[in-house]
Length: 186
Image 1 (spheres, rainbow, N blue to C red):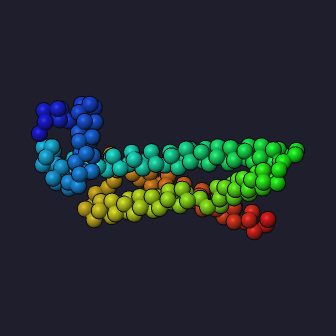
Image 2 (image 1 turned 30 degrees about the vertical axis):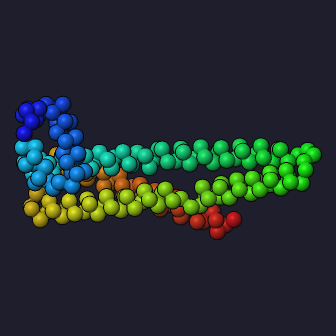
Image 3 (image 1 turned 180 degrees about the vertical axis):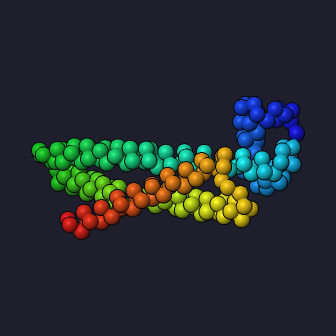
């Protein structure tokens, strides 16, 4: 074991240990192998991995809730601005080939705006990630209940994360239902 891991309660050492645990996990080592390599217990390696997974899930949730919607809105706004300029450029004397070219651009822009509004491939991928996380959490809760333990300490964050994931999923489903109603009414 590296001497930098001796004072296990020092924040810097915890961060260094977690970085090393992640690096070794990324190389395919098991929790037991990580523990042996770093001179820590298997349960410590397990807790570090759970903590890192929870933090990654929090970053993913923030990305889904903040970054994706703002980028989506920015893309739609940009496409609409280009669409306005494309329509404005059709006013005036244009050769038939130029007019055809600009109308082709306009049709392409309409298609892109429509695709941004309806396809939602990013949201689908995000929901798949949410489903995987829910399954992981279910397994974790099952493991603890089989061992007769209660979720405490670091695991509480996981329980809170599960509640957040459920809320995100409900919000997404209600948004999709509203969009379907709007499409039917249109």
